[in-house]
Image (cartoon, rainbow, N blue to C red; front, side):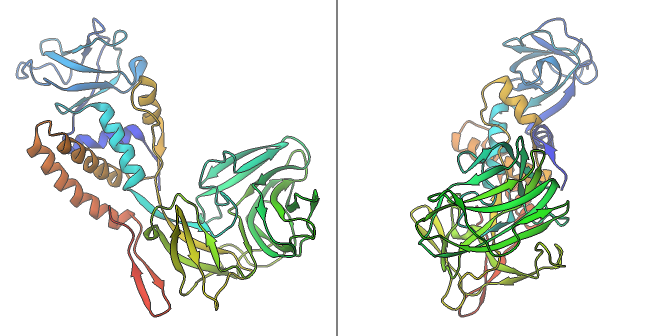
Length: 437
């Protein structure tokens, strides 16, 4: 799906009459207190109060991101006077005029609220004990770099784009690596690790490190890979005698190695209870749970796209404090296979703040994969709810827009949003719908 800018998403609101006019200044104005548009604003039929109580926002050029309140329209010259003045004269540039009472920054806030709480899709995530093993969250303190630079990459998974994110490790020295946070297992406890990998240059090596003993744990299976194209490293091992603290290291052997690592599956053999990331707010954001068969591994003839997804029966979804838990049955514990679950994920916010010129320009330039009609309907829904709750007038308009936006959003949700998924329980197959908000 093609990405769109924050500006393009917001300017869809012209179709909802929340933005009254998308215009372009035709010449540099005579002062900082006006915008000159001799094409759209020059007409004897336009009253000087045409845009009374409206805000205007500059969306390009040297005044990009500045906002002001409309004072009056000089229809003879096409000058839209504002107060307070801009920081300088307005050159040829685009601008937006909003419906009376609508603050441009409120629209940006509503746009981000729509992206982060209404618009969503199913994502495939690994079931893993490793913190941020799906590369879904910022690296922060979850993975550390040694002689390497770490960067999460989007949309470069296998040809069918199985995953949202991969981790690219770019070495600055030999044996550069990314190291996970520590795990703690019982002595001689067995574990399973599977990680997709594509080697852009050099040699990829998966290491499970005995932190207590400062040695590498002996692994069964092929732990190295070379060459472009996605395959998988699959190994098993045991917590050594004398040590219970271990880490997973994703290493490039050469100083010039550049390696892409997919989501990492790590679980204890026979494990029946495992926590999912705390970002999941409700069990209804957890869809199918399944494992792969005939998946790609180093040295096999299997390729991505030939694997089968087999649903795991009777998985219970629980919460302990803020942690979602998957409970597997005695008959179906975690085996030496990569397990996945579907997570309802929302889109990222485009802004981090909504007060300054820089905040607005950053949000306008940022991109999202949310379909534009899906995001626009959700934005209008949020904005209408806010303005109705403020009782600031124009209730009839906002009530009408709320009803229209809810209708359009529900249609777009069916088209673009996460579809309800059948989930097998012990007794029967049922449909678990995703959360409607």
